[in-house]
Amino acid sequence: MLKSLVLATAIASLSGFAARAADFTLSSADIRDGGALAEAQVANAFGCTGGNVSPQLSWSNAPEGTKSFVVSAYDPDAPTGSGFWHWAMFNIPASVTGLERGITPDKGAPEGAVQSRADAGFASYLGACPPAGETHRYIFTVTALSVDKLDLDQNASGALIGFMTNANALAKAAITVTYGR
Image 1 (tube, one colour):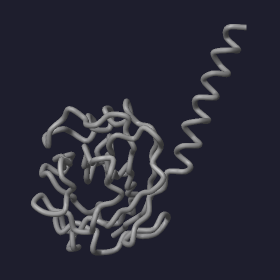
Image 2 (tube, helix red, strand yellow; image 1 turned 45 degrees about the vertical axis):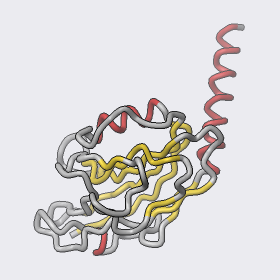
Image 3 (cartoon, rainbow, N blue to C red; image 1 turned 135 degrees about the horizontal axis):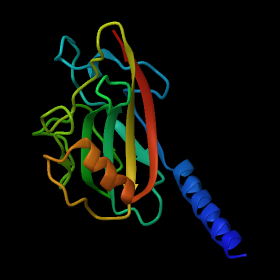
Image 4 (tube, rainbow, N blue to C red; image 1 turned 90 degrees about the vertical axis):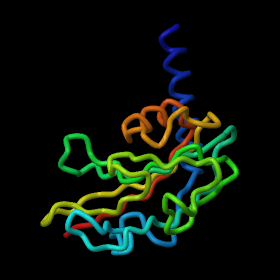
């Protein structure tokens, strides 16, 4: 009986999370789920000659209790053994519902938000640049958090930000695009 009650409670909790996640959406004027990444969002480094411009992102229907957001861009196909974090911005205030195109270390980030060095080595967006002959997926995610801020700084790794984000997540919304060369 106790096992059944615990299982029923767990299922109800997960279905509630799924319902909140289904309502929470991410959109963009620059990227489309299932589409190809434009040259503007490709790196201008590592042999690529793109614009290295972060895409415009908008989100809506954040779940009740959202206190902040995290935005990330992740390449699960990078030949590192652990993927590659192209962008991580956290401590985005709950009142913010989007990011403008072309955020740099010096312009465009919401007040109080922190851009991390992630895997790129500098606190800003790094566009796509898979090895020649490969096509990779790039997952842009916004996560609604139950905390006002993550107690991290711009030197935090993508993995640490991911861990702290998942520990405090209320809902996630994502757009997955591809880029190949």
